[in-house]
Image (cartoon, rainbow, N blue to C red):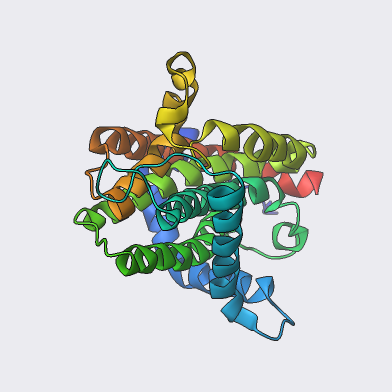
Length: 288
């Protein structure tokens, strides 16, 4: 009498998961699903509202007015004028602050939401064979749509002020650095959030209460006393925000060396973060 042996699939090694070719092949193979889920997330944000996706334009416009009043009138800061070393106008102050908060919000929105990405969708883990590793990618894409809409408003505002930055072509490099910073963090936090349910609160405090104030968003870097500038220099978001302002508003070349380091480090970190997520996902169903 023959015997039927049933064996569970052997888990792949961490190094196999971390292979860049494996990661790119996996994400490219699920590109249609990534696009669909990103579009779904965008639709869900304003589901049931009358204006729908028009809020992607109205929200940054309203924020622009609010920041202009608060930091240009109530609490004015000293900023350099666009493309010069003179004193900034109210428009310059508003555009500098608005661009900084737009770039930071893209980072903060994805990172704060990351610990809940898997926890909020247990049905995808338990009942369906679904590539949940794409969830952080779809979150980055969906949040980037709103950030890009706001950045376009900044570019139009700078053009209306008579300044078209000659270094605007470097903006895609800045955005790639930002995405490469966000993605590995999102993969790691999405995995940890399944096992450590306090992660949303911890990340919210760090990103929303601490990191935002060590990133020169509401003030120029030059306003920080020299002995405290180390807090700015070790913060990669400070380099990205500053580079975005250089590219869009100041007409200066961003620090390509710093951006290159962030991109290279992010690429390596993404491989490790993806491998960690794929190894950890085998235990998601038991916890959820």
